[in-house]
Image (tube, rainbow, N blue to C red):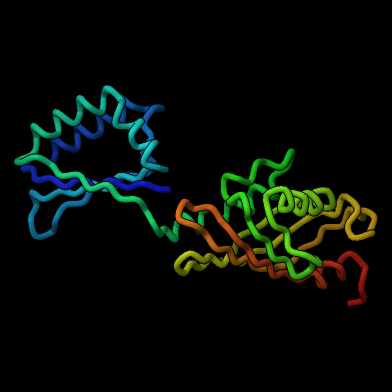
Length: 232
């Protein structure tokens, strides 16, 4: 689960605090575990400063706090503040941007050339895949991988994400798929033809940013027409 720490302090030495932060970033290069950091200054009180730091998880954040540079910088930061800073630790329970990024990453992984990469980066173990062109849903990582391998064996392809919308734990990704027919596909021998289709993928995510369910919609009839399997 993504973890966020909010650091709230008061200081009249903002420039010195910025230089201190820059030095910490330089000293911890390659070992720092924070993924994102934002510093804001109160519009109604210039001495009131808030920093929001994001980590992949609480455990990863703790590794960051154990760096010797972190302890030293903290002591120097306290000396620059007018009073002791306060820290608020938050587990992220909803992050629509993270869900959208995971959905894009899923399309990248299943289309990437070479051996199919592990999908547990973006999918939960019991992922449930709904595909209207398949007689049965794909449930579980192994079933999802078999479905992806079928497409990868038949086409060299890539997705172009045209649009994304997020609402709560759901993300809808509208995409264009472009491929070259290089292997057997539903009984059709490879033609070398370049084909394309449009479609959408709706996915439901859990708090840690992994998808637990997905619904595909795409123009299979149009694809088969391009391959000469049905009359246009």
